[in-house]
Length: 132
Ligand SMILES: [Zn+2]
Image 1 (spheres, rainbow, N blue to C red):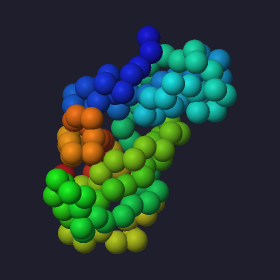
Image 2: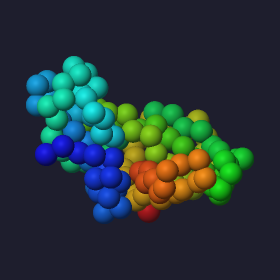
Image 3: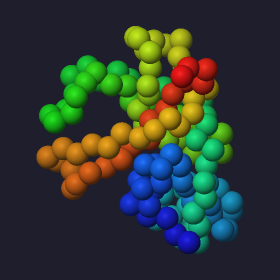
Image 4: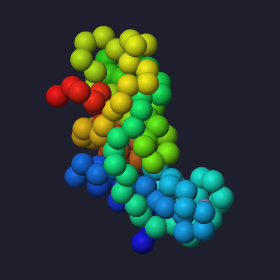
């Protein structure tokens, strides 16, 4: 079964991180795309990822876009299964460079909408392993 953005976002609301497995080369793509990120095949099926990974980089948004509330942390996570996923990071206190490389896990979702978007969007939220 193919996975569409709406399915991806609905799954996030239920605490699941979904991607697509390529039926030709086995590569996982997350979030869903129309084609495999490695070989371009359109033969893809939905697959659940663990939601765990490594914090590769992040930035702190102190002056948020119109309609958003800040500050917040945007992060890039390399999942255990391979795909790099952008989301938000729940960080205790001030987020600094010492967080790079830390283990993270999916902890929730952030739903947002601004006047530039076509309706609500849902973003994964990650938390550092070892923090409640
Ligand atoms: Zn492929």
